[in-house]
Length: 397
Image 1 (tube, helix red, strand yellow):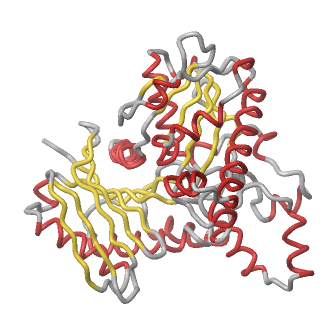
Image 2 (cartoon, rainbow, N blue to C red; image 1 turned 90 degrees about the horizontal axis):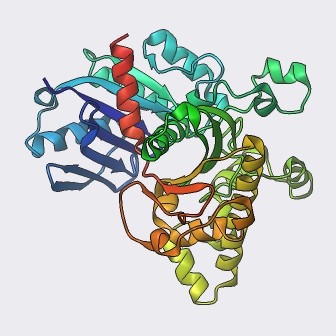
């Protein structure tokens, strides 16, 4: 009998959802309700080869999920008839207390709420999604899958910040890492593509989307990652700055009179590619560069420079690297970013094949030359499938 998992990813003003068959490894439906709480909202569902849309006002997350379920019925699909067995919630931060996929009861939800200060932009809307889904679907098990899980066991040298130890311990300050579900999934797919056990493969995974992160994985275990205590650290992202001198924050507070909230908003929402070049869509970035836009050129150069620094650092961390994988929206679709990030690294054993790199494909594939000592891959990520499989594993005990 077919069994499915509804995967919910709740943001501050959107609710994404997918209906996944974890046994077949396929998504049966996916959709999004956008601009929740605004005057004009929009909803979309793709199911059975058809796309259904609605333009309406969606007042809150409760209404958003109810709109999603109504669209399933409109598409002729009753979730009960599709074998729905559980709901999986993508959660960003579990702190040091929750890291494995976990059944969500009142006690666990209370712990996640306590952790909101660690991820103020992500955990509160995630909690809203849990609250609403548990209320609408009370008879189904709900399972939280945490972005931080894969990086929970980072070596202490990689997880620790060099600040006062007592302060760090008291306030749970450490490197948690994020996008862990994607990094784990892609590393497993990369090893399978090479026909080798994950435990034998040393990898660098580059998850490049609007949020971006890099990881070094030795034999299936994460040994370093670019995001830190929050998703703000590391690579240049769509609207986030990535690595920054902490002194800049104090300087802006003193000299510019900016409040902590002002600075946090700027670094998370008005920095990165948007802050430097005014654009987060890389297709538009390339168009602007071709038109001679100096700001777009600088934004792109800073992005690639930071990416190359992390590749070089993780080559050193791993000692021996077998494969580098690109994934997520930019990583999977932007051949120029892939080529520029690795250009000139032939002495380090990395050689891109131009024809393979520029070929259009949605499949996992090799883009390195046959004589490249390190294999370079493009591996489409599927966080929803990974979450659904984690949910089933919890149900099966």
